[in-house]
Image (cartoon, rainbow, N blue to C red; front, top):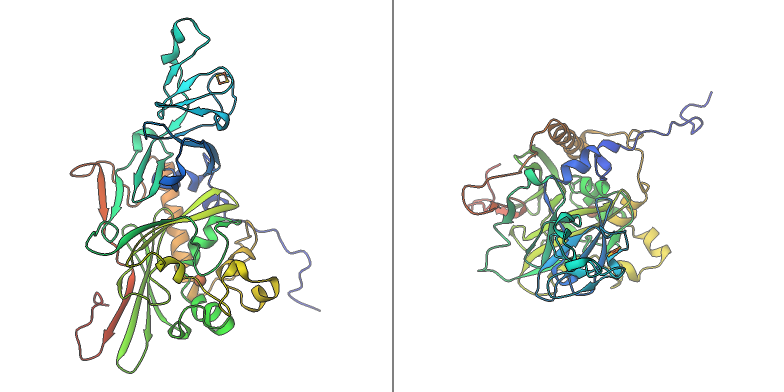
Length: 400
Ligand code: FES
Ligand SMILES: [Fe+2]
């Protein structure tokens, strides 16, 4: 008798408790406990812009006096969309009956009402707090009493080196700016170091640098704020590469240049931000020594970038997008066959489930600081990076 045929294959589970992001979903509530980048600061203008973040429709704008605002789209009066609103000095005016709302949703004017609306202070357009940091606009979509201190990063704030790039177009080696599949596949992939020598080297040819074809020796570990993998590669008889890659909760990736363009700590911080359950985008802040540094990280096939390749070339030279998207928009995780080299993925899912449980029970998830010792920011140190040690010379990597 034939065994292992596809007949009667169960649908399987899509890990909804970790992959779904809408309000009230287990991990959606975890994501809502952190500041999330939702746009470039330059996207907030006097022309209202539609956003979808964590399954919620929102309108982003910037008043003529310069304040960014993020409001629910449906006007608190009778629901016309503020997408058609007009931005003024202090707020956005609904096109239907002219109610004017400030960036925190206060109703400033109701022009059809006596005295411009005697009870207008009883109305509040639903809003979210925003904050601008190095060219990205962050929002906090969670419960107001759990709003955390704003996280900042040592390498991004180090003014002694280069300049900052804020980017919403850099998925990685190759792929569209907006990813049309569940955000978790991409985040998990950060802790999958063994796909690098296969997909990005042996299968598709050198997509980064030849050293990435070396099968690494990996060590996975939990940190206070996520999961870290150290991938060791013997580059030459004397040189060893210790490549440290991290995920930080709830959706941050810290990945040093896969092309080894820089040694030392990673200067890229990326957030995998879900628009909804099947669409997401990576927002990146990078401190770089020249403006093309992020573009140079992208893979090329015969000089062509991902979007310049045809279908036959994508099949011959698949990269991250093809491997991740082809798992399905929301794939069945219970059909997987996880092995020892999937340890990072397993550890991440375990830690995610733990945070979801913590939040459901009223706790605060990993890395959240509600009341910092001083000010309203909390600073994080980045460990991720490419560390090269040379035998008989002091290593520049943290001790193994
Ligand atoms: S629906 Fe917006 S002012 Fe009436
Ligand atoms: Fe990859």
